[in-house]
Image 1 (cartoon, rainbow, N blue to C red):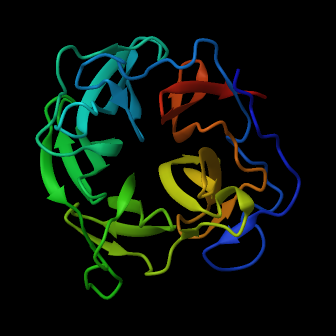
Image 2: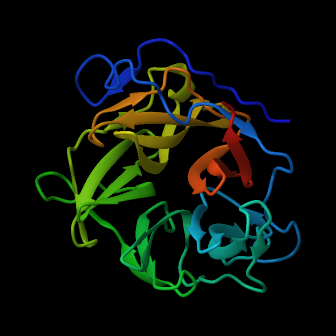
Image 3: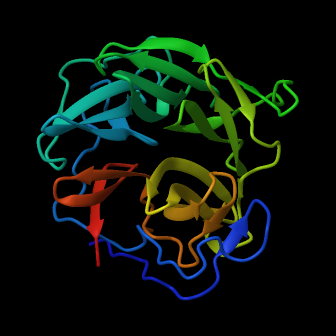
Length: 301
């Protein structure tokens, strides 16, 4: 039985991205204490000779009418297709029914995905082959169009350096798209766009770096941004030791999306449960970890 690894800890948060002291001062943290529900995991690969024998990395869940929709990455090591996009639905967020037969999108590599719905259109940001982020869109969540790799530039307008940039996480507010991305899991950068075509770094230095805290000194990658009680909260997964591949779920918060403080009691969930997504349900908040399977956590307080 997984156990909640976090309790509210008194102390000074670590500020990342400039300045000194804690952004939140004495205000209490949200989203720091979770317990697993009975019946975990609630979704996993089929374990059979199907295209989605296994699932991996971050899937994404959104409320949909009276139920929920899950988009996930499926693959089969015995098949050469690579990473494809699947879909499952649920009336309660705990019992899931996958779309039968085949993936809903397999024209290009789709992995580690984030979905945001704006003005009736689903925008998906995902890793492509080589951990290069790309964007897809859909009006119904089933049929998707791939718009190609993201064009991310430095503050001066020149392209960012060659190499991978992955785990794309999007936040939309006041007509501006905000994109968090990692490079080799070393740190997190932030770029913005108004047209979903050209993305420009807010600054060319990371807004969230790994370490020096022991819980994330080896690797970091953002999974989701939410807003609550005047703060932006950022769920991210991390490694403490590169030789021990046990991922954890962590949280940070910010007033402006640029300067972040890490919760001093991180990790909030351990036991190799990572790629977390917060979903608000009629029964309250739930935190879903997506890798290596889908588990549900409810507030422990």
